[in-house]
Length: 311
Length: 140
Image 1 (cartoon, rainbow over the protein chains, first blue to last red):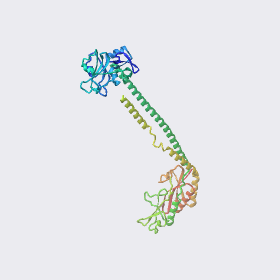
Image 2 (tube, each protein chain N blue to C red):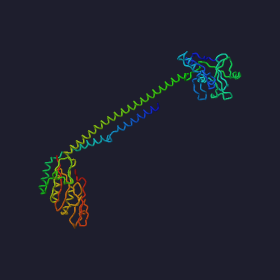
Image 3 (cartoon, one colour):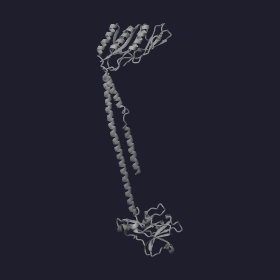
Image 4 (spheres, rainbow over the protein chains, first blue to last red):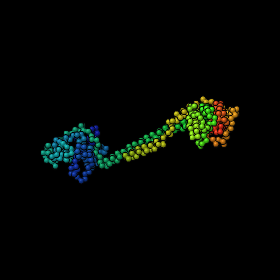
């Protein structure tokens, strides 16, 4: 006989709870009376075990009688503690007294070790089960459950309203979490941008200071250059070369055509008199000569580096 | 809920990127130090150069050199500068002149003036045995 008392507070796993009759499998729901409303306490298991339901009216009554005490389904606890040995027989019985108890029935002629083949759960009184033959009951597996060894499932039973309130609460909680994350993100973006803006302002202030400093230095250079020349003009080498040309050909003249302007910042081009007998480019270095149709030599003087400084 | 998170995240990123664009430093930000250092070096170099003599004194000297050599020394005023293709346009005080005479004498005068007073030589022409040379004497 089981130590589990149904419908009254008992202590399991260090916690005061109430265990009530629950039903496994949809067949049990079909055979229930019309005024019963069933609420799911355990969804269909990953191994194929059907969902487990409890009578919500019974749960309401327990809430009124024992407020604040968690309620669990019987088979819910047994399955959670792996105390239902499938595969041994068609019927598994948890006896609650002489000739009474709860039972779990597998589909006839099926694989009894497969939880998906659980047909239904129900209860019996006076040693009689309407849907079963006596030999099936005789061959049933009887469970021996001790309270001390039990552990509580992850979630107790809730009425639909409680589930709704719980879901609503969790939904609200999720919104709070989302809102908190949003606020944290917004603050993080704000702090990051504030920091970047501050660094930018510091850099721009530094930039402006350096720009002003640069302008001051430029102005200082301009002021200094109003009194100083970094390089004193010296065209002595060019003058010497032109003078040498003139010593050979005193009648030297400069071209008069448009765009032909001699100057110390430009070029030095001269024309000899017609029939001048000497090619001066052969006499003087840095001079090139070109004989034209009037038999005049057009002489060009290469300007040495550093000559012809202008401003 | 997820949409709200995505909207805040995307909005934050968009705002950060937009602000990031407006936070771009000027392109010459990294070069300013080296530019200013170069300016300072230039100042140090220019400071080593002596201050030029007064323009009036240099002008008198140039004029005297030309006179002594018998070369004409004709000042060019601001109106006359308009006819010149090249002339001095720097920051120093300056007066310009046209030196004219026999080519070798003009060249000799130009060389002597330039060796004694800071003078820029510009355009010249030689025609009919006469050379005309534009010069600019600079000073303070």
